[in-house]
Length: 200
Length: 200
Image (cartoon, rainbow over all chains, first blue to last red; front, side, top):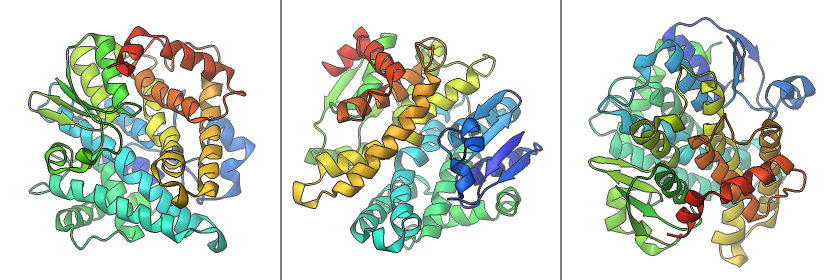
Protein backbone atom coordinates (compact mmCIF):
# COMPACT_ATOMS: atom_id res chain seq x y z
CA UNK A 1 0.00 0.00 0.00
CA UNK A 2 1.07 3.55 -0.64
CA UNK A 3 0.06 6.55 1.45
CA UNK A 4 0.33 10.16 0.30
CA UNK A 5 1.09 11.92 3.55
CA UNK A 6 1.83 15.28 5.13
CA UNK A 7 2.74 15.89 8.78
CA UNK A 8 0.04 17.53 10.96
CA UNK A 9 -2.68 16.52 8.50
CA UNK A 10 -5.48 13.95 8.42
CA UNK A 11 -2.93 11.63 6.78
CA UNK A 12 -1.54 10.91 10.26
CA UNK A 13 -4.81 9.02 10.86
CA UNK A 14 -4.08 6.63 8.01
CA UNK A 15 -0.48 5.91 8.93
CA UNK A 16 -1.48 5.56 12.59
CA UNK A 17 -4.04 2.90 11.67
CA UNK A 18 -1.58 1.06 9.41
CA UNK A 19 0.88 1.02 12.31
CA UNK A 20 -1.82 -0.25 14.69
CA UNK A 21 -2.66 -3.15 12.39
CA UNK A 22 0.92 -3.84 11.34
CA UNK A 23 0.38 -3.58 7.61
CA UNK A 24 3.41 -2.52 5.56
CA UNK A 25 3.18 0.65 3.46
CA UNK A 26 5.30 3.05 1.51
CA UNK A 27 5.02 6.82 1.90
CA UNK A 28 4.97 9.74 -0.48
CA UNK A 29 5.64 12.75 1.74
CA UNK A 30 4.42 16.27 1.18
CA UNK A 31 4.41 19.33 3.40
CA UNK A 32 0.96 20.94 3.76
CA UNK A 33 0.64 23.76 1.27
CA UNK A 34 3.42 22.41 -0.95
CA UNK A 35 2.79 23.34 -4.61
CA UNK A 36 3.18 19.76 -5.85
CA UNK A 37 -0.02 18.82 -4.00
CA UNK A 38 -1.88 20.92 -6.60
CA UNK A 39 0.34 19.82 -9.50
CA UNK A 40 -0.80 17.67 -12.46
CA UNK A 41 0.91 14.53 -11.20
CA UNK A 42 -0.82 14.39 -7.81
CA UNK A 43 -4.19 15.75 -8.93
CA UNK A 44 -4.43 12.82 -11.33
CA UNK A 45 -4.47 10.66 -8.18
CA UNK A 46 -6.51 13.05 -6.01
CA UNK A 47 -8.23 15.84 -7.98
CA UNK A 48 -8.64 17.89 -4.79
CA UNK A 49 -4.91 17.84 -4.03
CA UNK A 50 -5.48 16.81 -0.41
CA UNK A 51 -3.91 14.19 1.84
CA UNK A 52 -4.24 11.40 2.75
CA UNK A 53 -4.64 9.32 -0.35
CA UNK A 54 -4.32 5.55 0.03
CA UNK A 55 -3.50 3.36 -2.95
CA UNK A 56 -4.01 -0.37 -2.34
CA UNK A 57 -3.73 -2.29 -5.60
CA UNK A 58 -6.43 -0.90 -7.85
CA UNK A 59 -8.20 0.89 -4.97
CA UNK A 60 -7.60 4.63 -4.48
CA UNK A 61 -9.25 6.39 -1.54
CA UNK A 62 -8.80 9.89 -0.23
CA UNK A 63 -11.32 10.46 2.56
CA UNK A 64 -9.59 9.55 5.81
CA UNK A 65 -12.73 8.02 7.37
CA UNK A 66 -13.42 6.01 4.22
CA UNK A 67 -9.81 4.78 4.34
CA UNK A 68 -10.26 3.77 7.97
CA UNK A 69 -13.46 1.83 7.28
CA UNK A 70 -11.87 0.18 4.25
CA UNK A 71 -8.66 -0.83 6.08
CA UNK A 72 -10.57 -2.12 9.10
CA UNK A 73 -12.92 -4.21 6.98
CA UNK A 74 -10.08 -5.67 4.95
CA UNK A 75 -7.31 -6.10 7.53
CA UNK A 76 -8.62 -5.56 11.07
CA UNK A 77 -12.36 -6.16 11.52
CA UNK A 78 -11.98 -6.06 15.33
CA UNK A 79 -11.29 -2.31 15.06
CA UNK A 80 -14.73 -1.60 13.56
CA UNK A 81 -17.70 -3.05 15.50
CA UNK A 82 -20.30 -4.52 13.12
CA UNK A 83 -24.12 -4.46 13.17
CA UNK A 84 -24.27 -7.52 15.42
CA UNK A 85 -22.32 -5.78 18.19
CA UNK A 86 -24.03 -3.87 21.00
CA UNK A 87 -21.92 -0.75 20.47
CA UNK A 88 -22.38 -0.56 16.66
CA UNK A 89 -24.51 2.61 16.68
CA UNK A 90 -22.35 4.32 19.31
CA UNK A 91 -19.21 3.43 17.36
CA UNK A 92 -20.67 4.95 14.18
CA UNK A 93 -21.75 8.11 15.98
CA UNK A 94 -18.22 8.75 17.26
CA UNK A 95 -16.51 7.65 14.06
CA UNK A 96 -18.43 10.35 12.22
CA UNK A 97 -18.20 12.99 14.93
CA UNK A 98 -14.80 14.22 13.71
CA UNK A 99 -15.79 15.34 10.22
CA UNK A 100 -19.36 16.25 11.21
CA UNK A 101 -18.60 18.36 14.27
CA UNK A 102 -14.95 18.86 15.25
CA UNK A 103 -13.21 19.41 11.93
CA UNK A 104 -15.36 22.20 10.44
CA UNK A 105 -14.30 24.71 13.14
CA UNK A 106 -10.74 23.33 13.07
CA UNK A 107 -10.58 23.90 9.30
CA UNK A 108 -11.67 27.51 9.72
CA UNK A 109 -9.37 28.16 12.65
CA UNK A 110 -6.36 26.82 10.73
CA UNK A 111 -7.22 28.92 7.67
CA UNK A 112 -7.49 32.11 9.75
CA UNK A 113 -4.45 31.54 11.98
CA UNK A 114 -1.96 29.56 9.86
CA UNK A 115 -2.80 29.18 6.18
CA UNK A 116 -3.68 32.76 5.18
CA UNK A 117 -0.96 35.39 5.01
CA UNK A 118 -1.16 37.52 8.22
CA UNK A 119 -2.65 40.59 6.50
CA UNK A 120 -5.59 38.55 5.16
CA UNK A 121 -6.50 36.80 8.44
CA UNK A 122 -9.78 37.59 10.15
CA UNK A 123 -9.60 37.39 13.93
CA UNK A 124 -13.38 37.46 14.43
CA UNK A 125 -13.77 34.32 12.30
CA UNK A 126 -10.88 32.63 14.12
CA UNK A 127 -12.47 33.36 17.51
CA UNK A 128 -15.90 32.22 16.35
CA UNK A 129 -14.34 28.94 15.13
CA UNK A 130 -12.54 28.40 18.43
CA UNK A 131 -15.75 28.99 20.39
CA UNK A 132 -17.64 26.50 18.24
CA UNK A 133 -14.76 24.04 18.55
CA UNK A 134 -14.90 24.25 22.35
CA UNK A 135 -18.65 23.60 22.22
CA UNK A 136 -18.29 20.48 20.04
CA UNK A 137 -15.53 19.23 22.36
CA UNK A 138 -17.79 19.56 25.40
CA UNK A 139 -20.24 17.02 24.03
CA UNK A 140 -17.31 14.63 23.56
CA UNK A 141 -16.10 15.40 27.10
CA UNK A 142 -19.50 14.37 28.46
CA UNK A 143 -19.41 11.15 26.43
CA UNK A 144 -15.89 10.25 27.63
CA UNK A 145 -16.91 10.19 31.31
CA UNK A 146 -15.75 6.81 32.63
CA UNK A 147 -14.43 5.63 29.25
CA UNK A 148 -10.97 4.86 27.92
CA UNK A 149 -11.92 5.00 24.26
CA UNK A 150 -14.82 6.40 22.25
CA UNK A 151 -16.71 3.13 22.01
CA UNK A 152 -15.65 0.03 23.97
CA UNK A 153 -12.02 -0.85 23.26
CA UNK A 154 -9.73 0.94 20.80
CA UNK A 155 -11.39 1.28 17.37
CA UNK A 156 -11.03 3.35 14.19
CA UNK A 157 -13.31 5.92 15.85
CA UNK A 158 -10.23 6.70 17.97
CA UNK A 159 -7.84 7.04 15.01
CA UNK A 160 -10.32 9.47 13.42
CA UNK A 161 -12.16 11.42 16.12
CA UNK A 162 -9.35 10.86 18.62
CA UNK A 163 -6.98 12.45 16.10
CA UNK A 164 -9.34 15.42 15.74
CA UNK A 165 -9.29 15.82 19.55
CA UNK A 166 -5.48 15.78 19.55
CA UNK A 167 -5.42 18.37 16.75
CA UNK A 168 -7.86 20.58 18.66
CA UNK A 169 -5.64 20.51 21.74
CA UNK A 170 -2.50 21.28 19.76
CA UNK A 171 -4.19 24.19 18.03
CA UNK A 172 -5.01 25.81 21.35
CA UNK A 173 -8.60 24.82 22.16
CA UNK A 174 -9.22 25.33 25.88
CA UNK A 175 -8.84 21.89 27.48
CA UNK A 176 -8.98 23.14 31.07
CA UNK A 177 -12.70 22.23 31.40
CA UNK A 178 -12.09 18.93 29.58
CA UNK A 179 -10.38 16.51 31.98
CA UNK A 180 -11.79 13.39 30.31
CA UNK A 181 -10.69 14.49 26.86
CA UNK A 182 -7.30 15.58 28.20
CA UNK A 183 -6.50 12.14 29.57
CA UNK A 184 -7.99 10.56 26.46
CA UNK A 185 -5.66 12.60 24.24
CA UNK A 186 -2.70 11.73 26.50
CA UNK A 187 -3.62 8.06 26.25
CA UNK A 188 -3.74 8.18 22.45
CA UNK A 189 -0.54 10.18 22.06
CA UNK A 190 1.28 7.57 24.20
CA UNK A 191 0.43 4.72 21.82
CA UNK A 192 3.52 3.47 19.96
CA UNK A 193 1.58 3.36 16.67
CA UNK A 194 0.56 7.01 17.03
CA UNK A 195 4.16 8.01 17.78
CA UNK A 196 5.38 6.03 14.80
CA UNK A 197 2.85 7.78 12.55
CA UNK A 198 4.16 11.18 13.58
CA UNK A 199 7.81 10.14 13.20
CA UNK A 200 7.67 8.87 9.63
CA UNK B 1 -38.33 5.52 15.23
CA UNK B 2 -38.34 9.21 15.92
CA UNK B 3 -36.51 11.83 13.84
CA UNK B 4 -35.73 15.35 15.02
CA UNK B 5 -35.95 17.27 11.78
CA UNK B 6 -35.69 20.71 10.23
CA UNK B 7 -36.40 21.59 6.59
CA UNK B 8 -33.34 22.41 4.42
CA UNK B 9 -31.02 20.65 6.86
CA UNK B 10 -29.07 17.39 6.92
CA UNK B 11 -32.18 15.89 8.56
CA UNK B 12 -33.71 15.62 5.07
CA UNK B 13 -31.11 12.88 4.45
CA UNK B 14 -32.50 10.77 7.29
CA UNK B 15 -36.16 11.11 6.35
CA UNK B 16 -35.31 10.52 2.69
CA UNK B 17 -33.60 7.24 3.59
CA UNK B 18 -36.47 6.16 5.84
CA UNK B 19 -38.84 6.85 2.94
CA UNK B 20 -36.63 4.88 0.53
CA UNK B 21 -36.64 1.84 2.82
CA UNK B 22 -40.27 2.19 3.86
CA UNK B 23 -39.68 2.26 7.61
CA UNK B 24 -42.28 4.13 9.67
CA UNK B 25 -41.17 7.08 11.78
CA UNK B 26 -42.52 9.98 13.75
CA UNK B 27 -41.18 13.52 13.40
CA UNK B 28 -40.30 16.27 15.81
CA UNK B 29 -40.08 19.35 13.61
CA UNK B 30 -37.89 22.38 14.19
CA UNK B 31 -37.00 25.34 12.00
CA UNK B 32 -33.24 25.91 11.63
CA UNK B 33 -32.11 28.50 14.14
CA UNK B 34 -35.17 27.97 16.38
CA UNK B 35 -34.33 28.64 20.02
CA UNK B 36 -35.72 25.32 21.23
CA UNK B 37 -32.92 23.52 19.37
CA UNK B 38 -30.55 24.98 21.98
CA UNK B 39 -32.97 24.55 24.88
CA UNK B 40 -32.52 22.15 27.82
CA UNK B 41 -35.05 19.62 26.54
CA UNK B 42 -33.44 19.03 23.15
CA UNK B 43 -29.81 19.36 24.28
CA UNK B 44 -30.42 16.47 26.67
CA UNK B 45 -31.00 14.41 23.50
CA UNK B 46 -28.35 16.12 21.34
CA UNK B 47 -25.90 18.29 23.32
CA UNK B 48 -24.92 20.17 20.15
CA UNK B 49 -28.50 21.18 19.39
CA UNK B 50 -28.24 20.07 15.78
CA UNK B 51 -30.50 18.01 13.51
CA UNK B 52 -30.99 15.25 12.57
CA UNK B 53 -31.21 13.12 15.66
CA UNK B 54 -32.59 9.60 15.25
CA UNK B 55 -34.00 7.72 18.20
CA UNK B 56 -34.57 4.01 17.56
CA UNK B 57 -35.40 2.21 20.81
CA UNK B 58 -32.41 2.75 23.07
CA UNK B 59 -30.21 3.99 20.21
CA UNK B 60 -29.72 7.74 19.75
CA UNK B 61 -27.62 8.99 16.83
CA UNK B 62 -27.05 12.48 15.53
CA UNK B 63 -24.47 12.34 12.76
CA UNK B 64 -26.38 11.99 9.49
CA UNK B 65 -23.81 9.64 7.91
CA UNK B 66 -23.73 7.48 11.05
CA UNK B 67 -27.54 7.33 10.93
CA UNK B 68 -27.40 6.27 7.27
CA UNK B 69 -24.88 3.49 7.95
CA UNK B 70 -26.90 2.34 10.97
CA UNK B 71 -30.24 2.30 9.13
CA UNK B 72 -28.78 0.55 6.09
CA UNK B 73 -27.11 -2.15 8.21
CA UNK B 74 -30.26 -2.74 10.22
CA UNK B 75 -33.03 -2.35 7.64
CA UNK B 76 -31.62 -2.19 4.09
CA UNK B 77 -28.21 -3.82 3.64
CA UNK B 78 -28.53 -3.58 -0.16
CA UNK B 79 -28.13 0.21 0.13
CA UNK B 80 -24.63 -0.11 1.62
CA UNK B 81 -22.20 -2.33 -0.32
CA UNK B 82 -20.13 -4.50 2.03
CA UNK B 83 -16.45 -5.53 1.99
CA UNK B 84 -17.17 -8.48 -0.27
CA UNK B 85 -18.53 -6.24 -3.04
CA UNK B 86 -16.35 -4.88 -5.83
CA UNK B 87 -17.48 -1.28 -5.27
CA UNK B 88 -17.00 -1.27 -1.46
CA UNK B 89 -14.05 1.17 -1.46
CA UNK B 90 -15.63 3.45 -4.06
CA UNK B 91 -18.90 3.47 -2.12
CA UNK B 92 -17.07 4.49 1.08
CA UNK B 93 -15.13 7.23 -0.70
CA UNK B 94 -18.33 8.85 -1.98
CA UNK B 95 -20.29 8.26 1.21
CA UNK B 96 -17.67 10.29 3.09
CA UNK B 97 -17.14 12.90 0.38
CA UNK B 98 -20.06 15.03 1.62
CA UNK B 99 -18.78 15.81 5.11
CA UNK B 100 -15.11 15.66 4.14
CA UNK B 101 -15.22 17.92 1.08
CA UNK B 102 -18.58 19.46 0.11
CA UNK B 103 -20.10 20.45 3.45
CA UNK B 104 -17.24 22.51 4.95
CA UNK B 105 -17.52 25.22 2.28
CA UNK B 106 -21.34 24.92 2.33
CA UNK B 107 -21.34 25.50 6.10
CA UNK B 108 -19.25 28.64 5.71
CA UNK B 109 -21.28 29.94 2.79
CA UNK B 110 -24.54 29.50 4.71
CA UNK B 111 -23.12 31.26 7.78
CA UNK B 112 -21.95 34.25 5.72
CA UNK B 113 -25.03 34.58 3.49
CA UNK B 114 -27.98 33.38 5.59
CA UNK B 115 -27.28 32.75 9.27
CA UNK B 116 -25.42 35.92 10.28
CA UNK B 117 -27.29 39.22 10.46
CA UNK B 118 -26.48 41.23 7.28
CA UNK B 119 -24.18 43.73 9.01
CA UNK B 120 -21.94 40.94 10.34
CA UNK B 121 -21.57 39.02 7.05
CA UNK B 122 -18.20 38.85 5.34
CA UNK B 123 -18.42 38.75 1.56
CA UNK B 124 -14.80 37.75 1.05
CA UNK B 125 -15.30 34.60 3.18
CA UNK B 126 -18.55 33.82 1.35
CA UNK B 127 -16.82 34.08 -2.05
CA UNK B 128 -13.86 31.99 -0.89
CA UNK B 129 -16.29 29.29 0.31
CA UNK B 130 -18.17 29.32 -2.99
CA UNK B 131 -14.92 28.98 -4.95
CA UNK B 132 -13.81 26.03 -2.82
CA UNK B 133 -17.28 24.49 -3.15
CA UNK B 134 -17.07 24.69 -6.94
CA UNK B 135 -13.68 23.00 -6.82
CA UNK B 136 -14.92 20.09 -4.67
CA UNK B 137 -17.91 19.69 -6.99
CA UNK B 138 -15.63 19.41 -10.04
CA UNK B 139 -14.03 16.26 -8.69
CA UNK B 140 -17.52 14.80 -8.22
CA UNK B 141 -18.45 15.91 -11.76
CA UNK B 142 -15.49 13.97 -13.14
CA UNK B 143 -16.49 10.90 -11.13
CA UNK B 144 -20.12 11.03 -12.34
CA UNK B 145 -19.17 10.72 -16.02
CA UNK B 146 -21.26 7.82 -17.37
CA UNK B 147 -22.84 7.05 -13.98
CA UNK B 148 -26.38 7.29 -12.67
CA UNK B 149 -25.42 7.12 -8.98
CA UNK B 150 -22.24 7.61 -6.99
CA UNK B 151 -21.37 3.92 -6.78
CA UNK B 152 -23.27 1.29 -8.75
CA UNK B 153 -27.01 1.46 -8.05
CA UNK B 154 -28.69 3.81 -5.57
CA UNK B 155 -27.00 3.64 -2.13
CA UNK B 156 -26.77 5.70 1.05
CA UNK B 157 -23.84 7.53 -0.59
CA UNK B 158 -26.58 9.17 -2.69
CA UNK B 159 -28.76 10.16 0.27
CA UNK B 160 -25.70 11.76 1.88
CA UNK B 161 -23.37 13.13 -0.80
CA UNK B 162 -26.23 13.41 -3.29
CA UNK B 163 -28.05 15.60 -0.78
CA UNK B 164 -24.94 17.76 -0.40
CA UNK B 165 -24.87 18.20 -4.20
CA UNK B 166 -28.53 19.24 -4.19
CA UNK B 167 -27.85 21.73 -1.37
CA UNK B 168 -24.89 23.16 -3.28
CA UNK B 169 -27.04 23.76 -6.34
CA UNK B 170 -29.82 25.37 -4.35
CA UNK B 171 -27.36 27.67 -2.60
CA UNK B 172 -26.13 29.01 -5.92
CA UNK B 173 -22.97 27.05 -6.74
CA UNK B 174 -22.20 27.38 -10.45
CA UNK B 175 -23.56 24.21 -12.07
CA UNK B 176 -23.06 25.41 -15.67
CA UNK B 177 -19.77 23.48 -16.02
CA UNK B 178 -21.28 20.46 -14.21
CA UNK B 179 -23.62 18.65 -16.63
CA UNK B 180 -23.15 15.25 -15.00
CA UNK B 181 -23.91 16.59 -11.53
CA UNK B 182 -26.84 18.60 -12.85
CA UNK B 183 -28.58 15.55 -14.24
CA UNK B 184 -27.61 13.57 -11.15
CA UNK B 185 -29.26 16.18 -8.90
CA UNK B 186 -32.35 16.19 -11.18
CA UNK B 187 -32.52 12.42 -10.95
CA UNK B 188 -32.37 12.47 -7.15
CA UNK B 189 -34.87 15.30 -6.75
CA UNK B 190 -37.33 13.35 -8.91
CA UNK B 191 -37.36 10.35 -6.55
CA UNK B 192 -40.67 10.01 -4.70
CA UNK B 193 -38.86 9.33 -1.40
CA UNK B 194 -36.83 12.54 -1.75
CA UNK B 195 -39.99 14.53 -2.49
CA UNK B 196 -41.74 12.97 0.49
CA UNK B 197 -38.80 13.90 2.75
CA UNK B 198 -39.10 17.53 1.73
CA UNK B 199 -42.87 17.58 2.12
CA UNK B 200 -43.12 16.30 5.68
